[in-house]
Image 1 (cartoon, rainbow, N blue to C red):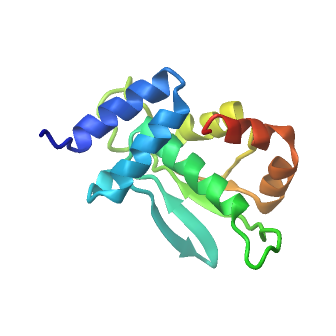
Image 2: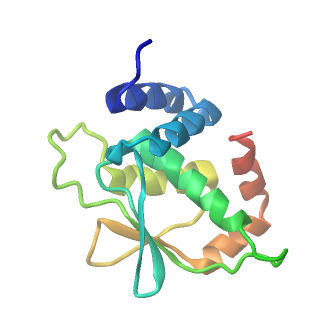
Length: 157
């Protein structure tokens, strides 16, 4: 059989994402992230004690799907049945300096737009660094309590 490579995964994820077939796009993004394709995973670390999710080198569709997955996982995770403890999340999109054409998607614009428009989750720009934004703990808590979060989860079921 034929084994898909990262290019094939990106193309199929993009097609599903563009047609708003988010469940299929997420399933494929998860599958690809579980393989050894570096360019199909969020680099998760911490900076100054805050979770830092680095989306460098991801396509718009892959970044949005994996970010949605990480967000939904973070708000659902709890220890011993306790409600989750929300904290600010630093998201790195990059400044788009390696974008080859002006028509190429730039994550710094597209990812916050996806979160604001589709998830209805507020993001906060970081002054002086266009390649980063924050999802504040207060924004997360408000979002989880809203109907918008439930509606967003429904896109992936």
